[in-house]
Amino acid sequence: MALKREIQGVVLKKAGDKTATILVEKRVMHPRYRKFVKRFKKYLIHDESNVANIGDTISAVECRPLSKRKSFRLSAIVKKGVE
Image (tube, rainbow, N blue to C red; front, side):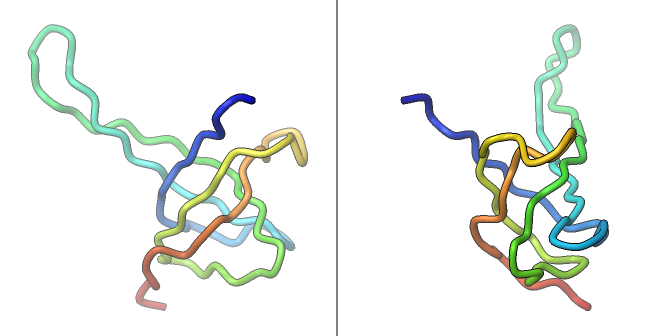
């Protein structure tokens, strides 16, 4: 059995019913300058019970494709946001 990827990010917006957009930040080393730089990517997350709010830091786990761009589901809310 393959390991499921787990990502952690901040909720940017609630995109429709049972869907949230999160921003994941990765720190990678620059190949030439040997300095850590930030890389960002947005993911669509399946939130079955609509509990995530804008500003929350959440953890998501990989699952089967639920739509064209949605392949992760909410596993836990790590930290509540300001709103």
